[in-house]
Image (cartoon, rainbow, N blue to C red; front, side, top):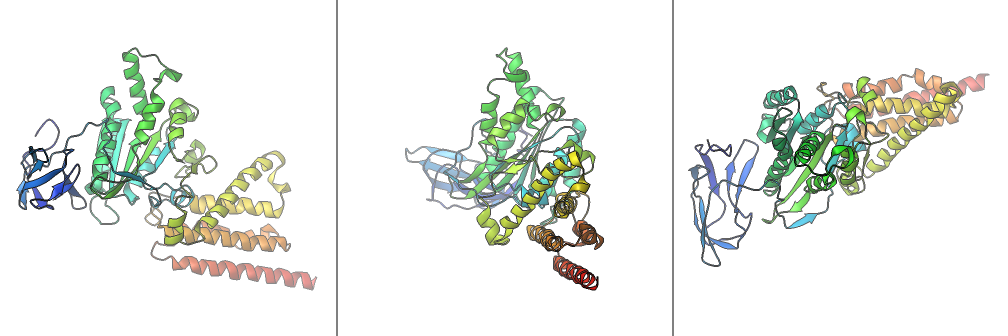
Length: 488
């Protein structure tokens, strides 16, 4: 075992992908090795030269230090290649072109995919105090997101949390293949009792590994838990170097370091012609849930998605505890074409209606706290009831329920359509004079809240049946009310 942590005695099955006389340059793929059942490691030329292949190993078993190719540069220099790659962690790996972002990272979490989506190649921050569910949220994303590879960085977290990750991940199955989740996961464990210099370096180690796989053409998602502990290590190192402190003792270069880290996300065309992406999802642990502290505020400047976790939601067992009133995603417009082509042309319009209802609920709750809910008109009471159904039936999601833990985007859209149908049909009845109390008595709102647990992912047609029930029930209520008016 070498000091690098790579087993130099293990044999790997190498399959060449180039021939003698082929031209190669930096990061050109010269062969492949099956790293796990899910991941094929592309062996790349690590020399930044234009060269010609003069020798290439035949398919077979080799150690990482064995020479598997020889290349000849234009100057006549002969270079030997093996399967071992080394790279300075703080140095960004090169690429050909940064590409536009257009495809969402599908996570199976409704509040994320439908309301606050993140794009492949995007940047996210998850700020939240102790116990708000940052780690559980990242675990869900690691398990269910459609990235090819997950890089999980446990930076400065408690030892027992990292122990749980190290013990649990090998037991988890990749839902798409049935293989162990560890077959496509890289774990970087750096607990709070480890040296601060190692903690500060762990973030860069993670993003460099992600770039290495991105260069092979993979979509990689980084879970950094948490960048606050990394920033604290940066502050401690800065203090020991007797550098001039800035706000709350953090070094003045904290913003630039955060910018450099999140700037390494993106979707690119690689030097070898493949396309890959890195999505960075960083947890932030502000003291006392104070989102005005320097790490949260500076991170907010460099990310495009903000999933703010709320302590009150977490304590009321609403998970994920993402506060829809303060969270946002700047990728919605970028992803509009994808949603239109892969889900429905009305997806974003439907999403907009949901967001509008939640915003109206926030305004109405402010009024209700002052004058009381009873003085509100029935149409405003309907907004509150429907918003409650959205919160419980759609935004709230259980990681421990076999049906609810992952929801495909098609089912999410159907659920959004259903609650909008219920709202718009009920609003028409209220405008005709039917009281909100009669609509509530139908039980449709309560039935919607249970839809997420009662309709399996392969039984989406049941939602169509519920839509028909909404139409028939409300039509019957309207007819009964009309008969009552005529008879009196």
